[in-house]
Image 1 (cartoon, rainbow, N blue to C red):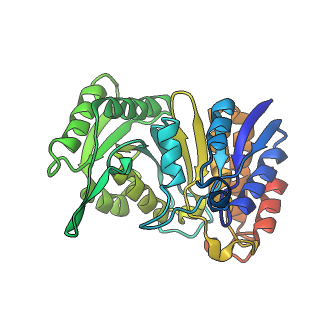
Image 2: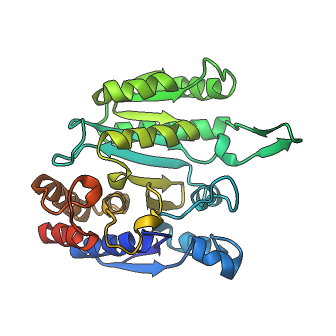
Length: 330
């Protein structure tokens, strides 16, 4: 039996984690869920949205799946997502971007993967004020972090029948930091029988809108990965369908990449697809391809049929109705 840490999260988090559990369990797989709370509800109890026992639980089980957790803007606590990635050394953020027939989007032939470095860059949170004049954030790029993320991306491409890996950077301006990333990518890519090229980040943004079908695996530092993965989500129907995985040497945390959407919390309107797709990634990580494929094929049928889609996908089905439809096809 697989024991998995489950973190429901804030806002719509508890609703979509419940939906995800129902879909996963419909496959017949035997999973024991160990549920722990993180987020806004824990601040009054523990003085932090991420109590130590949550991290301990993930370390014990080695694997977790979580709903969205609210991050205060411009003040308050550090992002729970960022903290988890740094505490558990989850250096890879993996986001597959794939079109589904039946979902209203401008593209129907996208199948690319964003590999985002997850532990450094501007997300280290090294900031200080310059008196009353301004503020400074430090972009930290290190050789070991660049090596392991580039190796992961190239190995992923090789192991998943991908032929091309594109490194995204801004080395024309940040010649030392992004220059280091690019040099390491070029050196490591010589060891692989893959097409390896690079693209400046602003050009990447334009080309992903014009010709997204040209890209297979894209690897990049933290900030660019955050921005471009959301851009790519917009190409295939929005953040409501895009899964995410945070992977390290010892631990893995799977998550929906969208926000907590408190404005629709408790209204049975949330789209649980992103977390369901994250569960598919989790099952594949656990080498449970048979169960992952059951869910993936069921989702494809639901989208193609188009009768039980949630509001964000152009339908009027509730969360419950959508999940029941997925389970029916499973």
